[in-house]
Image (cartoon, rainbow, N blue to C red; front, side, top):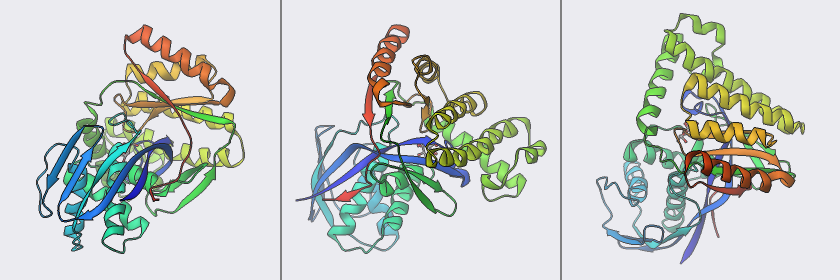
Length: 351
Ligand code: GLA
């Protein structure tokens, strides 16, 4: 058996900007999907998380609404590209929590495409594999997401954040300060609204770009928004400011101005909550409580509507912040949350 290790991701800043070809700044994290695999005649995989074994033949498949769909989705895209890998057997393991906004789906997709690429010498490079993962998510799973998640999972680099222009796909690795901790705080709320509301936001942004005759939100300025309907202008205003914040965040991180970087995270959260309206009372609570606890910054990460927040703090304060937040959160919402101390990590790798 071979082994592929595929990380999850957090997005530090640049939220809901990827589907309008704006800027994002994610990092891969050291919580992983592990896929032990070998070439086989059929697709026969055991998931230790779901404690379930599934076997299906290789060939055109329908969505089953189970975890195997992320594997079938990769086959679907590869077959459409006329690459025809054989089957695969193996076992899925790992410690990446599923469905909490840390891109467990992209992580699994990238593990599978990498395993197939290697087993059947498909000859895809990392960027091509990334696109296969995104296409599986868009065309088979049916989520109209951007490139953020698969890119971060593929191109992660230990101790670095990634500044990515999602239009040109040019990216830059930025060293992440070793005295700063990223805490992921999972609200424990399922992201039920996420897929419909996500598609709504995307439509508004696409319509706005069409009216403005721009390919990317990077080329839009706030003054351009006057010609848009009111709700469109409100949503696009957020996107335009968020793109600018990602560029500033890159510069702050590069020049070691971590407190200013933290403040941008907080501004980003307030703006997305008020003007893009994808936050939730639980996420807002986490952000305001962590600032009371002297975190450097905090914001929702990923699509929003539940899922997880990230908190940035100096390492020496991180345990105190996480523990007190955990208690306060439980007291306030009577909900069981969970938190993780994460570090910027390598992208998907065969070991
Ligand atoms: C989800 C999507 C990404 C991105 C984020 C929001 O994670 O999969 O493509 O749009 O939401 O930034």
